[in-house]
Image 1 (cartoon, rainbow, N blue to C red):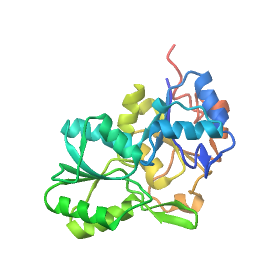
Image 2: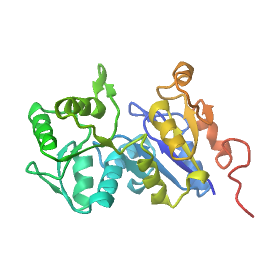
Image 3: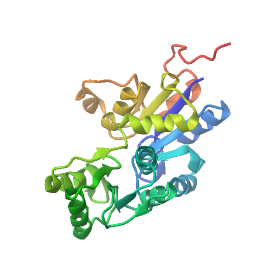
Length: 266
């Protein structure tokens, strides 16, 4: 049985507007009883917040079907360290995820420094994080994205801020979000799916397609985000298929590549 992992921004919506065909695509998944998860490197909002945001756009996706880099990071840390403490730079999406696994958030001798996305990075917080890491705290970051969209173009994102901390401490963070296969596998486990029967849909070569490839999934790149033919040609790997948008998949939801690979066993 086929299942899907799909990126959110650039695949289902763009700058607050639903991408044509996205509603029909989600409807087809539900109609055919196909398991799916929506993935995002956005660590600022909780799955519940993102679900409400999508609902306002007309996309009915439950919080349980949304897997953020913050929830993936919390899952990873819970498996790696059980209950521990962290100094967190980030928004509610990240702090809530860590509270839910029983972690203590502190700026005193924390076991980890966890860096996520925020629009209010402060010099004081970066200084605290840097000194904790220099004194032995382990360094985790939710996602490696260097930039994000902003009203005037782009804004520095988690990867850029992590680079600043690395310059001070000499320590590289461990990134949990896409393209790390850890995020993909935890999402697959959430829906009981296997990589060989799952398709990854995304709009970015450097995170979505790479993540799918490294996790053993076949991949579909949509042209509704940031990647175009010139962008695709820059990379040494390729998506399995390129389509204009998820609208092109609605009529072929069980056989997106037209080769019968995901046909149900009789």
